[in-house]
Each structure stands twice: as structure tokens, then as C-alpha cells.
Image (cartoon, rainbow, N blue to C red; front, side, top):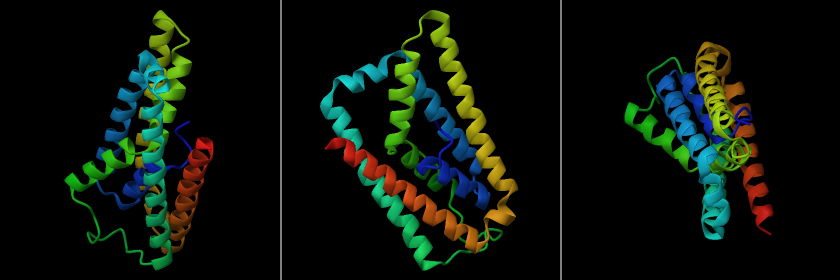
Length: 189
């Protein structure tokens, strides 16, 4: 569920390519997922599903976030001003990476849908040790995924940092963000 390239994964990918606090960003994503999976599996999914206004707020906030994030990706592709990631130019400070990682994670509706709602619903079907094992297993999957993505992107940075590849990535990310926003919108009506 976490493998499709969405806002969170594309951000980690970008930080890995730039080698700009990519391990810190992966750690934040992983810790947020651990907390959200725990909330979902141990009762949070029922709370959100039971409140129409919370679900509506999360959905419309997510649609807005995805539209803006997609627009930013399309703008970057259109401007085609990709810098050399081997230089210090254009790198974010640690505090900017932390703030952006939290925004990309916690303002992303798919994080809640995947971790709290879907995993919470599946995990809620288990009892006792099986529920705990399910929660731990999904948390470990997130840990492995985020660190693999960040370190893999850093390792493949010479290829991924090429302007043509960056442009294709930005276009694909923009398309995915807008498709997900459309999907969320279409489920409202």
C-alpha cells in the first residue's frame, strides 16, 4: 500500500536524490506511519468513519493539498530549471526538511486512508496477539520501505538527478497527485 509513488514517497525520493537530510525525512515518515497505524489498528479508524464531518474535512483538505502539490510538480517540469544535485545550491535546511516532511506526511489524505482507515479496518478484525502482530508487521514494512527508498534514491542519485529524468519524475508525480485528487473528489459525489 505504501509503494505507489504519492506525495510522501516522491518527497523522500527527491530528498534521497539530493542527499539532503533524506534519512531524517525517512525517519519522520516512518514514525508518523507507526503512530497512525497504531491509532488505526487500535480504534482510530472507527472514530473517523463514524464522523461525517471529520471524514469530509480530511478529504477536502487532502484534495486541496494534492492539487497544490501536483501544480508545484508541473510548474517545476514546465520551468525545466533542474540544478546539479551535487552542489550545495538549492538544498533545504534541516528545519525546512523537517517541516516539509511533516506537511507532506500529515496533510496527505492517503496517509490517513492507508494507515488509519484501511490498515485499521483490517487490523481491527484481529484480536489479542494477532492484532499486535499485524500492527508490528505493518510498522516494520513501513520502516523497511522508507529507509530503502531514501537510501536507494541516494545510491541511484547520479542517474535520477539527470534533468531529463527529473522532469519525467515531476510530470509523473503531478499526474499521480491530480489523479488521486480527482479520485477523492469523485467519491464525494
